[in-house]
Image 1 (cartoon, rainbow, N blue to C red):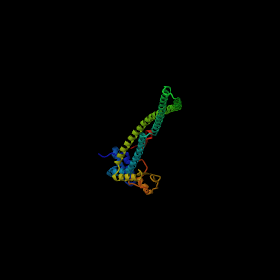
Image 2 (cartoon, rainbow, N blue to C red; image 1 turned 120 degrees about the vertical axis):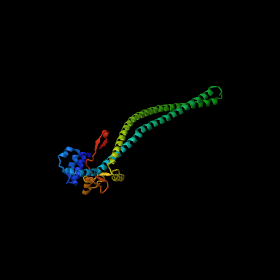
Image 3 (spheres, rainbow, N blue to C red; image 1 turned 90 degrees about the horizontal axis):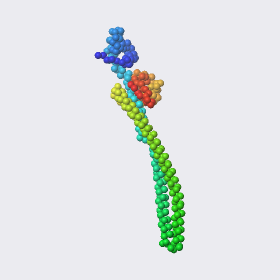
Image 4 (cartoon, rainbow, N blue to C red; image 1 turned 45 degrees about the horizontal axis):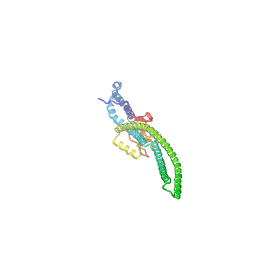
Length: 317
């Protein structure tokens, strides 16, 4: 059974033959059309059949030549998008792992807790000191009024000591009131910091959920792109792929550069007309005279880039 060729394959064969085999183009393309549409063959002369073997034999080489640079350019597009998605994925993973807002809220709450603890400790120290002072005053008053001390001078000295202790306790009472106010203020600050932390963490949980959704979406895109890459590589020869990978390593990830107004988009260098013509024919690989990247004459490379949800650019073949 004879093979069936697509309209695109027939058109590529026609363009190739038109530039190189103008003599038999009419007959060869007629023969190719006859393969896909048997009734069409009836309306053509028997001479078309004579060129059928030639057209069939040349078609794989024609198609291979035409698509050689296009396949490399297609691979470049995929690799560029994989690199972009990979960078986006790394950024999202970093956002998931780190949250400056939460860290700041946690630090604020920790500082408030430390301040409250220090204030409470100071208040407790004053309270303990006050209790100790009160106990000492009680002991001295028992000595004063217990009748065990009878010497007037000793009684006077004891009374003076008790008065001094009471005066000190009064000052201590003022310090305690100040400390209690400080504790109350510190408790309010700690409570506000705790509430702020809870609010920030709740917002963070929602943010992380959105980030995880985006991460999963990117991972799916990258997986699809990797599959597309594996498929694209099957159409590229080992030598061309080796050249491509070598250029990618040396040229910051860009091995194939499109031509724009006769200039290489990779470095901006203007190209000679002969080099541009080679690039347009796509039978041989043309390389930039300056940066040595593979040159691609922009045209329909067999793919479309469509904008998906959230601004995603999805490459389809």
